[in-house]
Image 1 (cartoon, rainbow, N blue to C red):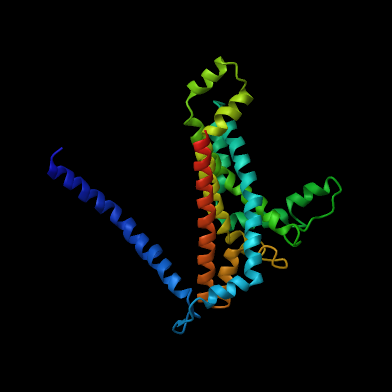
Image 2: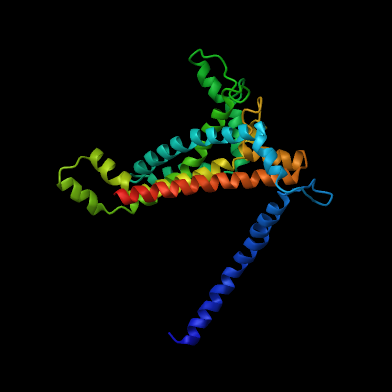
Length: 293
């Protein structure tokens, strides 16, 4: 390949990726820096921002409401992620086999992923309805009284977690399936010749070799659950008794209901730092485990 051809290829490549770069600069990078500036101001969205230094951050450190929302978001992530990963892995193992009609089941499992979160949330509000919901109907067959899943502060967050697990399983299943299909069959055959059972192969081969997939799913899950907003907004509005008010919902309220953009920006950056720390810890944990293998 001549030098002239190489330059032409580079120019063509730059031309193709330029729209993405421009998009990210205008709609992501510039808003992030602007939001960082706003986090040090008192800004209501209409008048000029007033610089107040780190006052917003100091107030947030003392705010019980913000602390509770972080704790609630953490509980939500803990309820969602382990079960989501476990069910996704089980489904991926099941559909990794050559069974007739398996493509159909893969499509069914993936269907919730491509359904908009608002539509999914509305459907689950109907399912949880104490009078007409199918879940309470099934419970009534066993003489169990109606459960106010979304109206009871002790069950509301967990009820949303169930919906979130159901919706996220399809995506993670695909990731796990790709990981499973990347493991060489020769490894399993060698283990079988050495007398390993299928269970031993799963614990000694499958799970360790899927470690990068576990970490990827975990980090993406942490980011996703800590940014949860739509399902809380649609299903409960943050209630009852603020039991489902996560950080994402609190940021929305602060910005668009109380028109306190500066404080909302501060919350967003603290949330970003928390997600960054958790993601970094997951990476370090993975690196440490890889060194031990």
